[in-house]
Image (cartoon, rainbow, N blue to C red; front, side, top):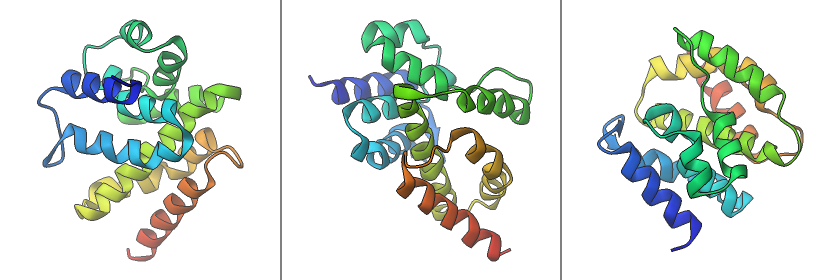
Length: 169
């Protein structure tokens, strides 16, 4: 079994009966992996694993043991830090992402793919609540995760969708 299939199976098993809106969780994971596919196998592997530590009892150590230290480091970067509110969790997580450089910037590509997938799903599902949340977080998110030249197409599409929905308000 190749690493992508292993990561997908691992994530689906760990997420169990969790859902993403009205869909099984794997639909979101496949969406993120599809957006990250142009950035290589490791980006796709990390895409499948990006929520597993945050949303299940899975540990970073398990990711490291089953995949690699690099994959585990990237998953840790995209995993929200603990906090009582979303605002506190995101502030801590964005601070962590802002300090990422070098090879670990692959995690930021996956995070951009994740956010773009979330925005697209919010539009398809007509979830104004989620779109308003992503719009309000966009500037801070971009300041922490954007790197010039890293994944411009993802950011360009994300910016267009955020701007388009702002105009519709």
